[in-house]
Amino acid sequence: MGFSQALSGLSAASTNLDVVGNNIANSQTVGFKSSGVQFADVYAGAKVGLGTRVSAVLQDFSNGTLESTNRNLDLAISGGGFFRMSQNDQVVYSRNGQMTMTADGYLQNAQGARLTGFPAGAGAGAEPVELQVPSEALAANATTGIKAEFKLDSNEASIDRGTTTFDQTNRDTYSYANSATVYDSQGNSHNVTMYFTKTADNQWEVRQSIDGKMAPGDPDEDGTAQFTVGQPKPLTFDTKGQLTSGMPLNFNFGDLGNGTDPLSVDFNLTGTTQNGGEFSLSSLTQDGYAAGNLVGIAINSDGSIMGNYSNEQSQNLGTISLANFRNPEGLKPVGDNAWAETGESGQALVGQAGVGMLGSIESGVVETSNVDLTRELVDLIVAQRTFQANTNSVRTQSEVLESVVNLR
Image 1 (tube, one colour):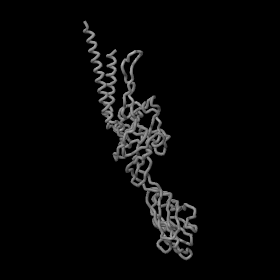
Image 2 (image 1 turned 30 degrees about the horizontal axis):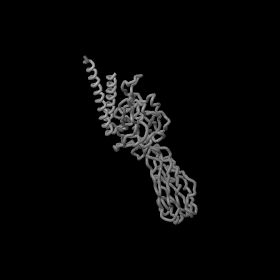
Image 3 (image 1 turned 90 degrees about the vertical axis):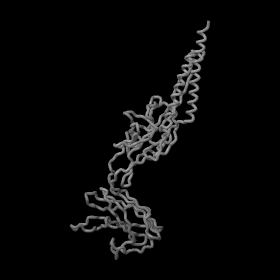
Image 4 (image 1 turned 60 degrees about the horizontal axis):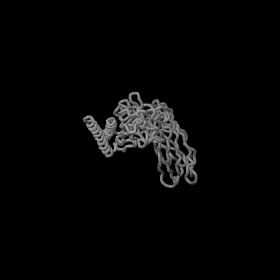
């Protein structure tokens, strides 16, 4: 019995040395989780114990330190959860977010596991798929609305339309002008000029031209007017200088040529005021843009992958999915910094970063191993002493047996 006790101790100590050695070997492995050995005694009805055994090797899923790399495809989870990845037709889970982009746009790690997530516009309730960054250019978008806020000078003299006809080339026929860029359906830029004219106290009118042409339009070679902007739109202010006219105002620029769609733009002046002081433009935005090529991606804390284009536009290309488990310690290690779901872990709870028990995603950082080298070195010494003690137990049992055999 003494030999079996000592041999069980040697076996358990050997396993402990293996676990500690594996922890030390992976102290620099990104996303690695250290393990610890749990022992149990063996009795089996005997008065004296029959030795020991390894009852479990449990993993420590506490978070490692986040370390900056300044590389936007290096990702880490700040909080709970795992990256959900596809590898060799199997779904695996990992805390290692060192990603690269393949030639066909997939995000994968050095082991070939591809990041999964929700397609753009599908939301977190959709089935996760392998995320692929499209290489196609962002199509042009025609302007449909302009939002602007002006400060008009209430001290400006009124212009009588009964005696003065508007002429865009004559500054004396309007009070103030400013310009904006708009885009047609093919992404061609056009210059829209807004002309403001004070016609009476608290009464203004606004006109618009496009590329220098306005109603009734400069005649083309065939004598027809190509551009139809319409009549001037009235603007009314109250006694405190606040705009009271209904917004938005619609300007129909018609067919701009080159096979583009007719351009119609809503002009929203909400927030424009009439006060004493010089004319000024407070803000100006419009929703159109030219076509653009993908120049890079950025990953937000909620996991959304934003494509950045050469036309200074951004577009959501998909959202990284995260997963968590009721019992992470029940996950099965499959190597390559990954784990697989088991019956003990429970089914994966998949969702979007920052929601519920799932942490946020940090870009430009990685999660270092949670191995505490100082503690592991101490554990290594203890495991070594335990192994030596069990070796001494075997030696002692051998000496006792030899003494019994040599009795005369």
